[in-house]
Image 1 (cartoon, rainbow, N blue to C red):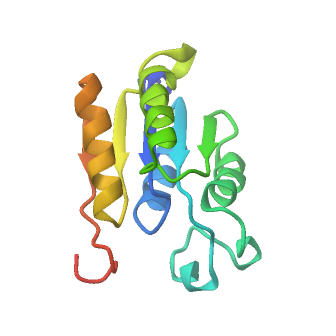
Image 2: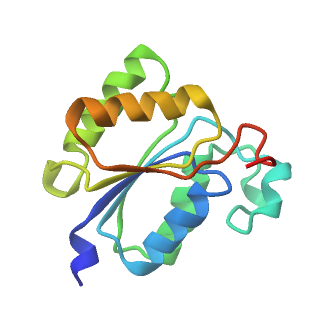
Length: 145
């Protein structure tokens, strides 16, 4: 029951982030805030999370459809945004500080990105507000780790 009181923000809903989001949803996390700016492609079908009929959808929209079917009790926020822009940096910062349940701070930020710029943005945002975060360590080409 305690897990229902926690909020997690995930940046990157690809191979790692989609699995993390699914497992947290199945565990009954209170709230998930999802950021990604990419679209689902047929090449993503090797990841069990996405389905062929979701091809062309934003990853966060496809994730919301799938996750809300798995556990409708979880609160979801989704943002189809590139966090590395100045405008979206400020928005990410605001969501970290006030995106949790009852507009409280997020409990944990998970970086599931595959590029250096996004990783550094997450690091800067979290350091600016003293936020706990974890890195998944996926490489840019998603092969060499």
